[in-house]
Image 1 (cartoon, rainbow, N blue to C red):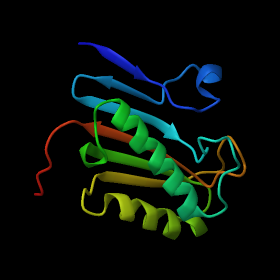
Image 2 (image 1 turned 90 degrees about the vertical axis):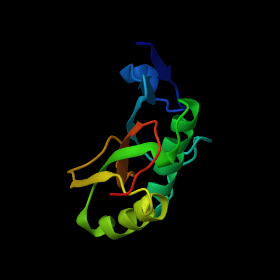
Image 3 (image 1 turned 135 degrees about the vertical axis):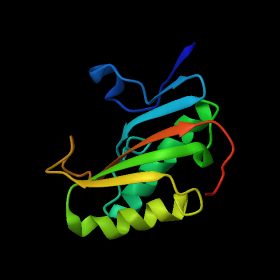
Length: 132
Protein backbone atom coordinates (compact mmCIF):
# COMPACT_ATOMS: atom_id res chain seq x y z
CA UNK A 1 0.00 0.00 0.00
CA UNK A 2 1.15 3.51 -0.76
CA UNK A 3 2.06 5.77 2.17
CA UNK A 4 1.33 9.47 1.54
CA UNK A 5 2.86 12.13 3.79
CA UNK A 6 0.89 15.34 4.21
CA UNK A 7 2.76 18.45 5.31
CA UNK A 8 1.29 21.43 7.09
CA UNK A 9 2.76 24.75 8.08
CA UNK A 10 3.96 23.88 11.58
CA UNK A 11 7.50 25.05 12.28
CA UNK A 12 7.87 21.91 14.43
CA UNK A 13 7.47 19.41 11.55
CA UNK A 14 11.13 19.48 10.43
CA UNK A 15 12.42 19.72 14.00
CA UNK A 16 10.55 16.66 15.28
CA UNK A 17 10.50 14.90 11.90
CA UNK A 18 6.76 14.39 11.64
CA UNK A 19 4.00 14.88 9.09
CA UNK A 20 0.77 16.75 9.75
CA UNK A 21 -1.01 13.66 8.47
CA UNK A 22 -0.24 10.28 6.94
CA UNK A 23 -2.56 8.45 4.56
CA UNK A 24 -2.29 4.72 3.97
CA UNK A 25 -5.11 3.23 1.91
CA UNK A 26 -8.41 4.63 3.11
CA UNK A 27 -7.02 5.62 6.53
CA UNK A 28 -5.74 9.09 7.42
CA UNK A 29 -4.08 9.80 10.75
CA UNK A 30 -3.65 13.46 11.69
CA UNK A 31 -0.91 14.31 14.19
CA UNK A 32 -1.50 16.25 17.36
CA UNK A 33 -2.55 19.64 16.05
CA UNK A 34 -1.89 22.69 18.19
CA UNK A 35 -3.45 26.14 17.74
CA UNK A 36 -0.63 27.50 15.58
CA UNK A 37 -2.24 29.90 13.07
CA UNK A 38 -1.01 29.50 9.49
CA UNK A 39 0.19 33.11 9.45
CA UNK A 40 2.51 32.48 12.40
CA UNK A 41 0.62 34.77 14.74
CA UNK A 42 0.04 33.98 18.40
CA UNK A 43 -2.75 31.56 19.22
CA UNK A 44 -6.08 33.09 20.19
CA UNK A 45 -6.65 33.28 23.95
CA UNK A 46 -9.74 31.10 24.53
CA UNK A 47 -10.34 27.36 24.51
CA UNK A 48 -13.09 27.60 21.88
CA UNK A 49 -11.01 29.76 19.58
CA UNK A 50 -7.90 27.61 19.97
CA UNK A 51 -9.87 24.42 19.36
CA UNK A 52 -11.36 25.93 16.20
CA UNK A 53 -7.85 26.75 14.91
CA UNK A 54 -6.85 23.12 15.58
CA UNK A 55 -9.97 21.78 13.86
CA UNK A 56 -9.49 24.07 10.85
CA UNK A 57 -5.91 22.81 10.47
CA UNK A 58 -7.10 19.21 10.79
CA UNK A 59 -9.69 19.89 8.08
CA UNK A 60 -7.00 21.30 5.78
CA UNK A 61 -4.80 18.24 6.31
CA UNK A 62 -7.71 15.90 5.63
CA UNK A 63 -8.52 17.75 2.41
CA UNK A 64 -4.89 17.43 1.25
CA UNK A 65 -5.16 13.69 1.96
CA UNK A 66 -8.38 13.33 -0.03
CA UNK A 67 -10.61 13.04 3.04
CA UNK A 68 -13.20 15.23 4.72
CA UNK A 69 -14.17 16.02 8.29
CA UNK A 70 -17.15 13.69 7.85
CA UNK A 71 -14.66 10.81 7.47
CA UNK A 72 -13.26 11.33 10.99
CA UNK A 73 -13.86 8.30 13.20
CA UNK A 74 -11.76 9.28 16.25
CA UNK A 75 -10.49 12.40 17.95
CA UNK A 76 -8.31 12.97 20.98
CA UNK A 77 -8.24 16.29 22.79
CA UNK A 78 -5.44 17.21 25.17
CA UNK A 79 -6.55 20.09 27.38
CA UNK A 80 -4.30 21.90 29.88
CA UNK A 81 -6.97 22.50 32.52
CA UNK A 82 -10.47 21.37 33.40
CA UNK A 83 -11.67 24.95 33.17
CA UNK A 84 -11.11 24.85 29.39
CA UNK A 85 -13.10 21.70 28.59
CA UNK A 86 -16.53 23.37 28.12
CA UNK A 87 -15.18 25.68 25.41
CA UNK A 88 -13.13 22.94 23.73
CA UNK A 89 -16.19 20.67 23.83
CA UNK A 90 -18.34 23.42 22.31
CA UNK A 91 -15.92 23.77 19.37
CA UNK A 92 -15.67 20.00 18.91
CA UNK A 93 -19.47 19.78 18.96
CA UNK A 94 -19.81 22.60 16.44
CA UNK A 95 -17.65 20.66 13.97
CA UNK A 96 -18.47 17.06 14.83
CA UNK A 97 -21.98 17.22 16.34
CA UNK A 98 -23.55 15.36 13.41
CA UNK A 99 -20.50 13.22 12.58
CA UNK A 100 -20.07 11.95 16.16
CA UNK A 101 -16.63 10.31 16.05
CA UNK A 102 -15.34 8.33 19.02
CA UNK A 103 -13.66 11.00 21.14
CA UNK A 104 -11.43 11.28 24.17
CA UNK A 105 -10.61 14.37 26.22
CA UNK A 106 -7.67 14.24 28.60
CA UNK A 107 -6.45 16.88 31.05
CA UNK A 108 -2.67 17.20 30.74
CA UNK A 109 -0.05 19.07 32.77
CA UNK A 110 1.00 21.16 29.78
CA UNK A 111 1.72 21.36 26.08
CA UNK A 112 4.84 22.40 24.16
CA UNK A 113 3.91 26.11 24.21
CA UNK A 114 2.44 27.40 27.50
CA UNK A 115 0.04 29.62 25.50
CA UNK A 116 -1.70 26.53 24.10
CA UNK A 117 -4.67 25.22 26.08
CA UNK A 118 -5.59 22.43 23.63
CA UNK A 119 -4.08 20.09 21.07
CA UNK A 120 -6.24 17.74 18.98
CA UNK A 121 -5.54 14.52 17.03
CA UNK A 122 -7.85 12.93 14.49
CA UNK A 123 -8.16 9.68 12.58
CA UNK A 124 -10.30 9.26 9.48
CA UNK A 125 -11.44 6.42 7.29
CA UNK A 126 -12.55 7.53 3.85
CA UNK A 127 -16.03 6.09 3.43
CA UNK A 128 -19.69 7.06 3.80
CA UNK A 129 -21.28 7.70 7.20
CA UNK A 130 -23.79 5.31 8.71
CA UNK A 131 -25.58 6.33 11.90
CA UNK A 132 -26.14 3.32 14.12
